[in-house]
Length: 187
Image (cartoon, rainbow, N blue to C red; front, top):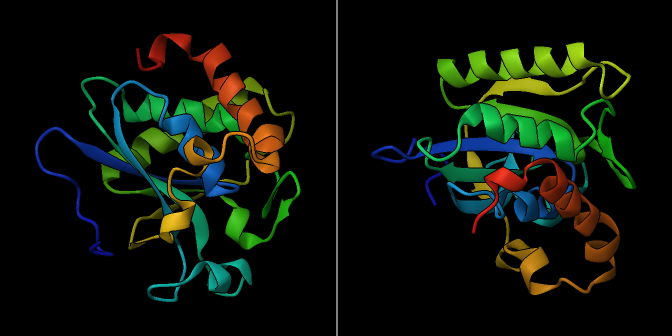
């Protein structure tokens, strides 16, 4: 995959988001109508073509992220961000639950000035709502490169639904998505 990752042609767009372990976000976004592909990977760092083991050290600058290809006629970038801010805690720096380190930070890597504008608006909405009770620490940075994670990380929840981490950490996030965004789910 080309690490420069230009926007897809036609009416498809990409969103690149990190909010803890990429397995969680991947499982959530795969459920949404209008989402065509979700790839787990790494972005936001300085090391080209990092491995999971390198990112895990916290020294590459990369976050675990998902790159979501979606049809904006079916789901908007704004709605993707609303889901994002519902299913992870954007107030804990460098951590989501037991996953600790800069690779688990909350981050939005915008692909266009329009995505940046929308992200700022949604972040302001979330902050003003007080739903999290603490200030947001989500980074908002321009997209530069995306590196897909190793194959064994792709579709992790679908392939391992009964694994301990999936049951304890991912399943509650998927349940939260289903409770809050029932009208946005795939048929």
